[in-house]
Image 1 (spheres, rainbow, N blue to C red):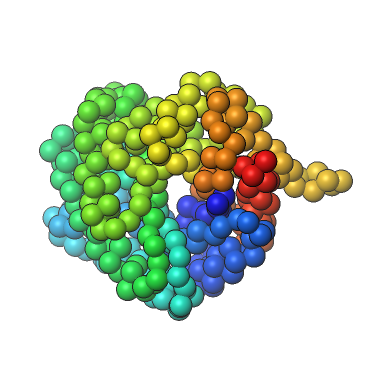
Image 2 (image 1 turned 180 degrees about the horizontal axis):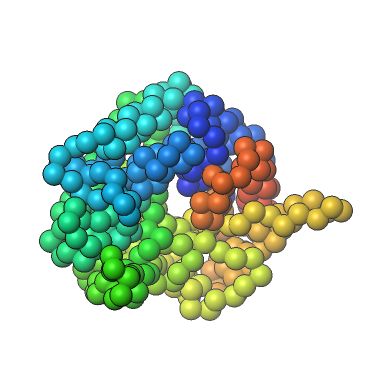
Length: 341
């Protein structure tokens, strides 16, 4: 069944209110559209509560702290890490109240090992990505931390069927060797494909062992599809642009689909006209038109999950965020009709 979900970032600073709104809005989707509620993130509370702050709060035996350029490794746990962990605990506490009695699929999002390695700095050095040994340790630490995190989520939502969105927005840059060093005068050396896949597999295997399905969110670049599939992801998340056609990207989507790997389609906010309102058909077309053009069966559209692209939803108002969810629900209903047709 076509479904609607989200990445996690939302406007506001009250985790209970945000979680209740998400669960409430997703119960009002059109008939025939499934809801995949998710654990919210509230970056307006500070860097300790954004996507990167949440990820470092999960690391096991790898202390971190805030430095001049953001998060970096540290010798011991300090105030910054304790605050990040406390905010995550607040989110889980709010979840236990808002999702009381819930049964069904439930998603959590976390920055993946390669994007995390690209954004985290060494205590006295460059991006952690530049240190081969450190990035292997980071993947192991994140895998262990996510296993613990899923156990915490299950305690709050015992009836939840967990799905992890492993966010890798920088995966293409990691593989292309275009990320700048600390000084900005050179670039971090590219990580070769087999090592990229191995790092992803370390985390994916741990999540599968913990009983969760894994969606690899790779942004708008086709270069992340292959590593996601080879690492064992159950689905690939791609940001799509209505009205565009990328033959190589959709060929890779078709190959992944033939191997049983699903598609989570990130879509921008619907265009709104004063006369016709939001153009949800254009959102549905962004998926269904290239899907059929590349030769995939229409019935497969019924397994696609729609969600907002990027993280812009957290920068707007609560009303705007709710409108995005509503429009995605209507677009999903269009896809469901096309899947049945």
